[in-house]
Image (tube, rainbow, N blue to C red; front, side, top):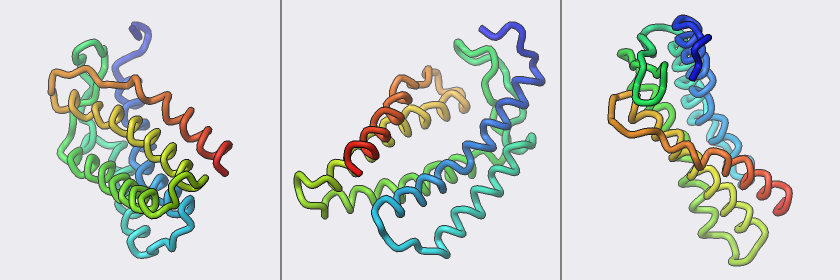
Length: 167
């Protein structure tokens, strides 16, 4: 699939992608709070941000990804280091918190309102993409399942629709 990509380049790309992935949860949490017009708990946000930044920095080291061997149909796939489990927690925790905030706001919004429709599209688009991305973690731990990346494009479509149509 990528015959011209060297092993060292694949390892570097994997670590860099994990670097950026480490901050997506905290960004989405902040986005959700702003979307809902809710009050941001600054100490909680700072905790999420600090943990995310530590995980981002660690992502560039062998403590996060020790190698990129071939797995299933992928010529290079991350092999977890000793700090990979906290990375997964860093991914799950802020997203789950944001999903709970969105779900609570969805339930409280007036049926048929623009806000309720907007929250529906943001929540359903993000959850479908989130589940696809979460499936990537299974193969990292050698669970013989090909990641379900089909829903990933849905987030762009549904978020765009939610923002443009239901301002």
